Image 1 (spheres, rainbow, N blue to C red):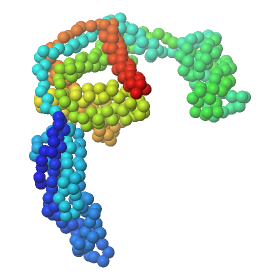
Image 2 (cartoon, helix red, strand yellow):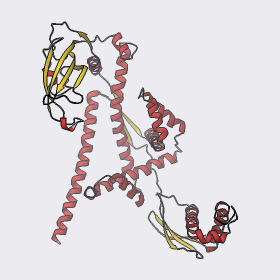
Image 3 (cartoon, rainbow, N blue to C red):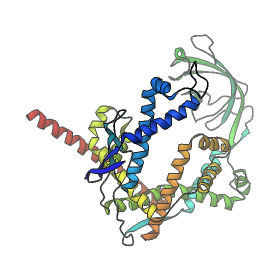
Image 4 (cartoon, rainbow, N blue to C red):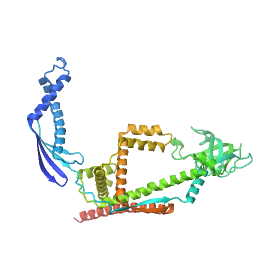
Length: 457
């Protein structure tokens, strides 16, 4: 095999590879010998079919199979020999092939750039430590109490009011006719929530136990039976029971009902839950601050094929006109993603970071704990979707890299309360929306400018 560097421009290298005809012929003969043991043809005993007969019948497919294998083997060997760090799948351009001829092809390779990582000790990032106020915890306790309210029966002569729980049987008609699903037994609604049909609750205000009340309502537009959608309907409702809401006493007993040891423990759990919710958003802000600094302070060449692949992935569900409209913005985003991916991977490789299978399993177990009752479903999902496990492994790898980067940068720790956290999160989201809209506007202005130039021509 003969390997020569045909050209080298930037990250793109083109190799010329020649495999002599004797090597090709040798591979063909090896394959013919293998097939002699496998092929069964009429008129010949198993394993006794002459190679000339096999070649006459399957020659073209055998040659194609051999060439395919030779291309795979020799291209890998050529890349290894020239010590190239390949980005994506190389392209093969056949120049000469055919039985009795040398195999001559070009191998077009986009290489990974050489990356010089900068020292991080001069960079700094902001991390947030949030303190949840007592008022917020008390509000959450009150919300829990309201969501888990208890009901006790009203007296027979007491009327239903908003907030009461009414149990009833109904029989409904449309145009004086019954329909599928026109009867219900033991239906239970809380007046004022309007979860049954629009305007239904308010017509039950004032009813008493054992009364029959006619309620007029309109069936929803998305009713399963299209012929019943938006139809005026009469409901004959027989009131079975009426209960009034009883305010929960927020004490140790209530806390135990919520799964805590006592009220103090429930408050701690609530504080942790609220803190975690804020931390998810605040950690994303910190991560973006770190990634922005990494991206801005490193200049590297980017492999064109990786940009193209990322762009295709990003826009695969877009209409052609939308792809064209936001082409510049999408290209910028694709380049940013590729650049950050290469930089983070370099940090990981230089520091020998790895994610073990045990770490992946531990993360899956952590997810299972947050989804009680769905343990089997989560496990089966990862077992049946290897790509999901691989994606999880990638996320864990990125987390390790970010933590490593944090350890090398200067920490600016800010202690904040929930109100300050809300402002920080809102401002961050607004800035990102504004940037996105600005990019789209600039892209649109460029398109308009181009169209004006074309019209002038």
